[in-house]
Amino acid sequence: MRVIGIGAGGHARVLLEALQTRQDIEVIGLLDADPDLKGAEVLGVRVLGGDDQLERLHAEGIRDVFIGVGGTSDNAPRRRLFELVKARGFEVLSVIHGSSVLSPSANLGEGTCLCPGAIVAAGATLGRNVIVNTGAIVEHDCEVGDHVHIASGAVIAGAVVIGEGAHVGAGASVRQGLKIGRYALVAMGAAVVDDVPDGGAVAGVPAKPLRSGVKP
Image (tube, rainbow, N blue to C red):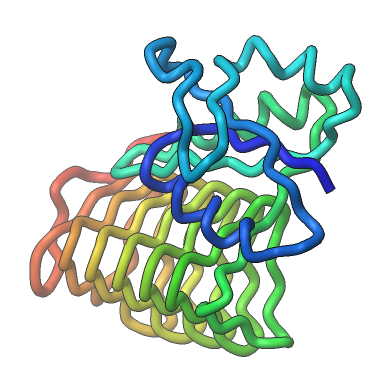
């Protein structure tokens, strides 16, 4: 399978390392919006240009991409990239690092990435274009919506529901059975003990609101 990567930064390198261990995949190039990166190489893979190359690559028979763009507090750019490549006729590859742990009863949506040391436990369901970053844990029976980023070292306890586009920061913990709303933000290191509304933001131990819920 010949594959193109979207993005040429740090997250792209993590995914590229995972894909380069697979004998059935050849990453033939990367695309990045930064014109200064054109012609550069990332782990031996050349940056071919920007998103304007997608039409040409599709015409040449490329049908699969991976999204190597991460996110800090705003996952809308990843969502837009996912929607862009789908509209152009591409399939988005899920990338599962060899050191991650994925329960056989878990379900992953299209384009979801499990980074080194990530754990997804029994009965968990992850939507499309989700990142479970390095060392993060998604426990049993969680439901994670599309375009969510669970950052490095975060712990999501059992049966938590996380809405589309939410961001759970590095090292944060979410108590079992809670609901994190759509496009909500859980700050780095927060200990979440109550539900977070759509568009809300919380921080601290225990977590307190930084902003009230708003319509995403």
